[in-house]
Amino acid sequence: MAHTPETRDKVRRLYVFDRISLEVAAMQCGVSMSTASRWKRESAEAGDDWDKVRAAALLAGDGIESIARAALVGFMTQYQATMDTLTVSDQIPAEKKVAMLASLADSFNKTVAASRKVLPETSQLATAMEVVQKLAGFIRERYPKHSQAFVEVLEPFGEELAKSYG
Image (cartoon, rainbow, N blue to C red; front, top):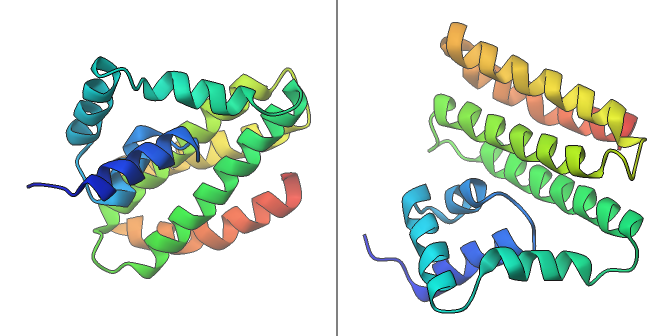
């Protein structure tokens, strides 16, 4: 399936400037992970290294604490936007929603791990998100019929986590 240049640009923007994982950016834009990876690789070969631009955009801020907080805020914004999309969409199967949630949780854990030493207050939120990620995997593997209910409960619970730890 051919995708428009706008779709490719959106995947790049989400990955580079909104700092979400390539997998989630691809899902949000309706392209396969292999297509997004190919676009990223082809861009790098043409001199547009998405990872270098992403790092430069992150470092353009003022101070390491500010960068770490901006990364966490950016992720939480994207997390909420993705949760809103998952909640509204009836076209995404429950199993795929759970997989997307697990991917979000993985991205969050990586973001938090990178900032934990700079921002010790993120440790509690990291623990909470790790538990949610493990629960998502547990439900996906052992109780797939409950995936839809888990997705419905997770969005408001995520808001509670953000209030408590964010």
